[in-house]
Image 1 (cartoon, rainbow, N blue to C red):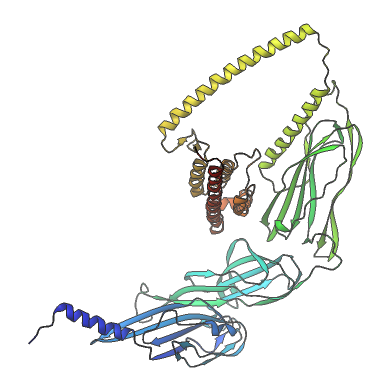
Image 2 (image 1 turned 180 degrees about the horizontal axis):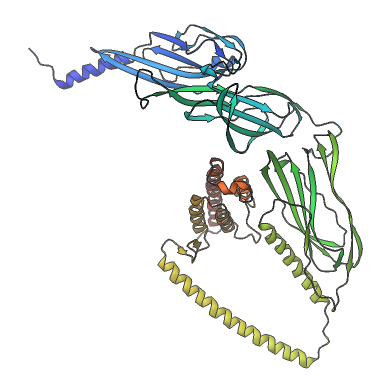
Length: 605
């Protein structure tokens, strides 16, 4: 008798297994976990294929006609009994009905086999207080206005009612076509009794800003969670299993009205718009002396992208040094508040009396449905000539509003005044005549030369000492960083690589102020040729960082700063890190391409 070797046996076994596993499916069956189902509940659809089927063979698109289809999970099981292989593939998906009535889950095809259609009845949501288990968890939605204008902010409130503890859960955001949806603040948690039953309530609010006119359906958010399912056959609850629950908030239909036809100015719908100025006290100024004027436009219920430019007009005898305007959006008292701030250094060059025209910004009042104007009244100023008896006194600014500002305003103002003063000093020097004698001039020149030589010697001595100290500290620190007296790390080399490494270390600490400073230093390393303050967006490669930088600045001056570790604030740092990496890659690619072009223009040898 011939003995079959072990390898031959394994080969026959694998061939048999492969043949069985690749056999076609025998049948497909579809089942649902409940029927009828209430409007705010979900249906769990299970499709089971008997036989070998591809995991991507299930197509849920036929269900989209009458249901919102959730995430689909797939599992497979293979068993071998007496060389007989049996394989089963199971697809499980969640269906959310959107209206009442009777609907049909159509026949679903999987590799040539089809399921039987299933009729589902969707009934209204039952009233509370009936003691039904299905009402232990539900979601409500509300909106402050069902009819609004284009770009007008709507306040949307979602409440999740929980009668028992949940193991875990997630609440999705509402959905609406052509709308900008932003969450306002943190979740609120409190308890209440509804129809004799105590609930733990989680409240979340959103700002809905429609971007198109017409009639839209605001889809309610979906809650998915797991709760304990106690097993009455077990004495202890440690082994209780969990069951999944799904609830969906009611949909809301809203009507968005277009811009009125008589509007001939930049569309700005709001409940409150104002423009304020920071201006030195008094109306008499000295010719050639710079004056800084700061204008701030504030609007309620809009985002910063909707704010128009602030119009400014000045007499032709004034020299102007404008700074780049800044915008920001913060959340206060369930509303978005946006601001645009412009700073301008003004130098009157001729004496006389001048009128600064009023500043007028038209806007649409959504409460009265009328056009209104935010204005700063016209101002008459007098410019006098400078003289020897007039001492240059600093002008104290008079702030007329409480604005959301940044530390960089002082830097911008000082830069403008410095530039203005340099030009003023140049003009003054050109007009100055000297009545000193030739002897006085000689002594003056000798004194200047002596002072210059002494200064150069002192600067050289200081520079040599600093260089030696830096070299010594750099040798002691291989990474290029040295410890500061306060325990913080400072950048020794001003290279982009060192600044980037320092920025990454600072981001990990999630310190708002330190991150802002490290980011500005890194941007300055990218913009070595730019003498102005480094900010995101100064070069095209860093535009992606600007929204996160603005959010970081808003966080620094908001009450949320006390809770930097919250989930929403963590997302700012996560998004900022991704934007920084993307911007750096684009910058490195540009520098590499620039180096290649230079090598082509100036070939070696």
